[in-house]
Length: 256
Image (cartoon, rainbow, N blue to C red):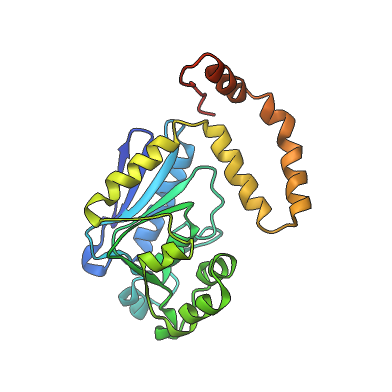
């Protein structure tokens, strides 16, 4: 039995790490289960997005299972080519949203940073604590901090291993929204479901163009956008969106 529960809420697949007695840390089996669940959701045409969260209100994910690491060696939660939990290095086609129900630390923080939006309970704390165990967050945590957080703050997190409250990460632009813990899943699912009323093709293309644009000059990024311009303007979803506006009705988009 693996420590993962999956649920479907309309067009959203929820992945819930279910190892509360181990602070929802990932052993090898749970990491593999998350990887398989993401692969399945990516292939399911009825699913438009995924939400990942943890059981309880104490921990989202405490990273790798240190008891397993002590017995068998560290790194068993790493999936070749896809990273920790099958998420931190994965190239996805569908949005992955984090619902941070408690502490997100070490590999749990790395999973959070790999998500596209982050909703956090107001009591949650987050950070890269690996330095306290003779490690560092090489599976994506440090790299994404370098892209998203000012240097002095990022290095303080990396070198001290201290955790930051959700509100501080919100102020830094890492967290999308901070909500009361009791409202976390309701709010996350509401925003995710509302997002999926938009064109799934436009969501996918907009997300991909953003990712491609982060590592290049503005001139190169504009050229990338222009390369997609005609296909975007001529798409069925674009025609439907414009027509629906002119006819003063809701748009009905395709799902591919």
